[in-house]
Length: 163
Image 1: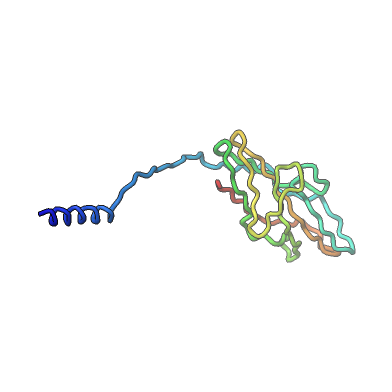
Image 2 (image 1 turned 180 degrees about the vertical axis):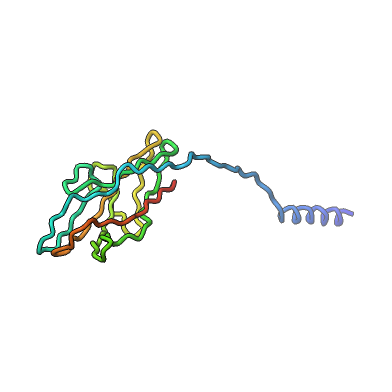
């Protein structure tokens, strides 16, 4: 009987080690939607065509002497960090008549300096202090020698998501 009781106790101890349970917590944070308001387009000052190729850069600095950076206001959950990414494929401006101007070296910042490079999927990540942040975008165009006169345009896309 003692042997049978001992075997039963051993079996109970062995079988109880094959299962266990533990509690875990489930969490969710609800954040406000992201608002994106375009304030200004990226506009270069008038350029005079010359015999030389002219790279012209507009930094995301609001005091840039070569033009005006694009400006957006991003709104959302206060103190949240957002990732701003150039997601369009714009590589040249077009005058509608077959002439083009290359554009690249995209940069984003807060309007106070040259910003950060945002080419090839790189991002700018401001904090929504007070629930908002201004984002300024600049780029470099390369005006060709004796570039054809005209108005050159192109569309680009800014994507903003929470981190």
